[in-house]
Amino acid sequence: MKVKTILVSQPAPKTETSPYFDLSDKQKVKIDFRSFIHVEGISVKEIRAQKIDLSKFSAIILTSRNAVDHFFRTAEEMRFKVPDSMKYFCQSEAVAYYLQKYVVYRKRKIYVGNRTFPELTKLIKKHKSEQFLLPSSDKLKPLIPDELNKLGIAWTRADLYRTVVSDLSDLENVFYDILVFFSPSGIESLLKNFPDFKQNDTRIAAFGPSTVKAVTDAGLKCDIVAPSRETPSMTMALEKYIKLANKK
Image (tube, rainbow, N blue to C red):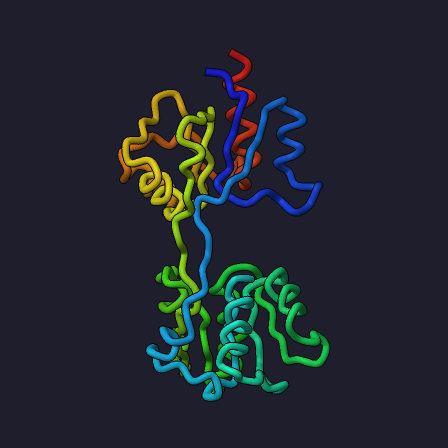
């Protein structure tokens, strides 16, 4: 079966230099984008029920831009003025750069990891005396608390936002040759929106082992898997598959 249409279960890229646009042009395929899940802030009332007092913390661990947004939203709604002395531990340069939306970067103590959480813990380990807050979603990878517990530091998790299934009812009679997923939540959304979903000739692409597992646990077939040694990105995996499929 040739590939002509692809649906990526994420928001459309904000930059024109996205590899998805290059893939579309080079392989002459139509690529659409649609968030299968979205994030909603948890109310201050629910956060207070977690016994979270922002004034007790001297350092914040930020793993994503959502964590940044919802930490500062919560601080504003709680009427808590974040002190200039607050230390920020950011998992990646992208998260650290995004932090500039809320703070004057050069005037703050900001520590930046090298993309993975275990890399960030090397920096956290050097500041063991701090009281750490981890702004989190309701779905947290077990790796993160496991790594923090190994450090023997004082840290607290605060669920500030949750992942919610998006309404996809307008896609009920729309069919794509490939559906692309990046998290188990995307598969959960697919099945909640379309409980009678039949894969038929639709190919499924999945990024990461947990997403692949969610696909197979749902009784579906995973045709395209990334990352791999040959195809470290999803666009590379898609291109390799499309070249083979469309050659036939």
